[in-house]
Length: 151
Image 1 (tube, rainbow, N blue to C red):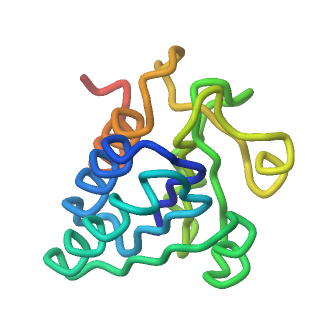
Image 2 (tube, rainbow, N blue to C red; image 1 turned 180 degrees about the vertical axis):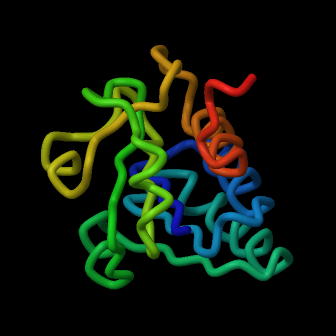
């Protein structure tokens, strides 16, 4: 699975998100796009260290479109609390090369970014809980193979 954090300027938000992504066995690559401000200056070098220690691939690119073009995912899911439809876990698990994208800023994705994938929300998550928490819930559901009703 390819996990993307798009449009982040906060060092702490970048480090928290990266820590969650890089400690998961489900994540093969972490991609950072549109990293700016202090996150680019101080956060990216620290994330490189985390990625190296966890033996995960890390890619830093200027735009989300670049990540999609280079990695050629079979499916791209833009996950936020404002998605119009709920994520279909069965569809997600059928795809061989999946890219899941989280926004590093509020209110989320721009209209142009939304057009690059399927904009969805996680079942039961209706409020903005931040990208790290959203990724944690997503990975938990993935590990449980989206058995959300089983308790």
